[in-house]
Image: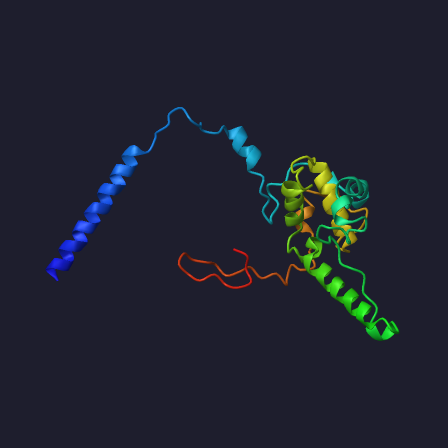
Length: 208
């Protein structure tokens, strides 16, 4: 037992010496980087919580958002919010039942599957909070042109998506006060994943 303990101590000493040697050989830098200013921190601190307390001034309606969508979004998501190379942004129209399409049963089944897939990915229906829709558009769209939309444009696009998904009316005005109050279709069906602790196995089905 004593020989084993001595061998372990020697191994630990060697590891510590090697670590100290490597640290001594690492280059050091001075004058690199600086503390960001409060203004710079605010520019990056753009997260919007479900309560919407961080939302900026601005407003928009679905009518305002329609031309913005056609100009900035339709090229990827499709003119009707579906059918583009990017994810669908509205629920798909109900597909006819297979029995109602003589000789077209496979096509009808494919249509039903496409409708179900669109329903799953349409953020304006699946998101539990309307503020999440605003936040995602503001921070992530348009692709490779993030940050180029004004607050009013983001409000208008959010209103347009919510209207197209039967969440609000076309002439409803959304702003920092009204947006957090919108009742989303999936608000009660949303279940947050359980809290993960370091060392625990991650649950299947959650992408983190």
